[in-house]
Image 1 (tube, helix red, strand yellow):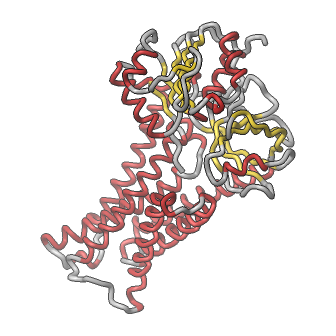
Image 2 (image 1 turned 45 degrees about the vertical axis):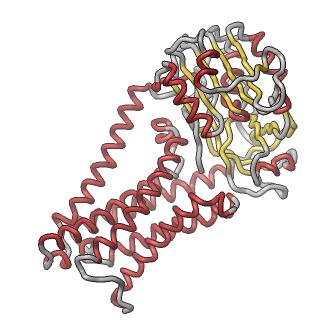
Image 3 (image 1 turned 30 degrees about the vertical axis):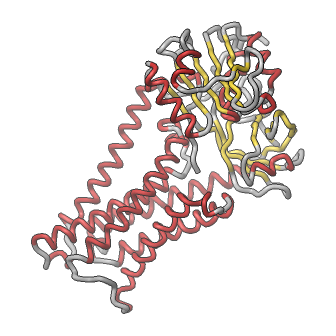
Length: 458
């Protein structure tokens, strides 16, 4: 195949532009939160006018905690909306992980908020009276937020399937937004009029726009379906799924990016799941996903039939070698099915005749778990500066390409002894593996700045 250029690929923001736009967005969020925090100081409610000293400080602090939680709840809508411009700056997987951390912080603020409010009021409970209905809305809000966070953290232990959790999570979060706006409007006179009231209705309008954008995107995705063109077993417990668009071309994407796919099939549920696009943009016409059967949903992937409709939301992510300089040495470390973004990159590198030095270290349980073994052998022929090292964690060591090694600090130090410390290192695999390898690489002397991982938690 003749070398091709990547002029047709999506444009990546430069590191400087990502830092600039990221700083602008973070600064805007902090300014909004600072503005919300100032409300109890400049727009005091009647309940604060008759409080002094420590009681006033506690009451004001309680209101501040509630307003911080409210601001972060609105931020959650942005973080989970899969906005392309946010993905190009922060990477969607990072946004979703931050979404989880923010949810825990919101729950903490929501718990502290009523405690600080009740202490100066000498209250231990809310009187059962209709006049306190906005406070009971707040109780519902607190319980719902706490429930959302607890179920999300304990879903696997509670043995709640992803599709059932997703539906519960969507309805619960929608009820949180409705309860939040009602609670803010009626729990005190602060937001009834004036600047705070105007700002609250601006926030409600903003949320409505984000919600409408998400719904519109969903409708457009459903109007542009793909079809399953083939489904084949490519290794032990791993299937190669290829899809083609019903109309038009495949979307433009970068090697290593991922997308959310969902099916309209009698054999598998319809919720969307994220998977790396394992094919290369240098080979247009279809997209390939390689999926290992390791969960309730993926165990049914082999039952998908040719011509079943597929819906794709993507591409997303910044886990690609194209973010590096053209001559930068590449190190790829994969665990199991975490090879898929590297597969996309290697296919592209081979098709474009890339001459740079590349080392791939790939850990699998056994030789039977190695996907597309023949194609990886061909990479070493088409990329003369590529070296592949297989690491098997179960069974006897194989030939020289399948050394029984450990990817700990000493093992990595030996495997990477001939690699430049300013190489770009891409690590993808189980979360604990990525964490341990990242720490080991830094101790060996690789720069944290050039270690790229893709951890995606739903």
